[in-house]
Image (cartoon, rainbow, N blue to C red; front, side, top):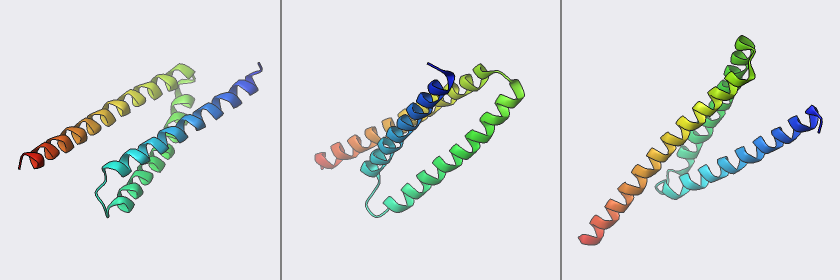
Length: 109
């Protein structure tokens, strides 16, 4: 397989993965957002995603140009991905625990 075809397949895989991640995040947010605040929360979510894409693209270009090593860019991407998963898991863990506690407290009353 040529380098061009491998690059094309990689870009397609990244886009499919990002689409699945974006859709899953949006659906998860919709389930936990209080009624009437969906628009503002989804707007903030979209703004953060857009800013992250812009800043991430510029930063990746700068890192790639500065170090001239592919592994540095991938190592930073993996580190940011791991940090993102930790933050998301902590947020959803707090949300699930708070929701469960509230539900149990309401049932006890």
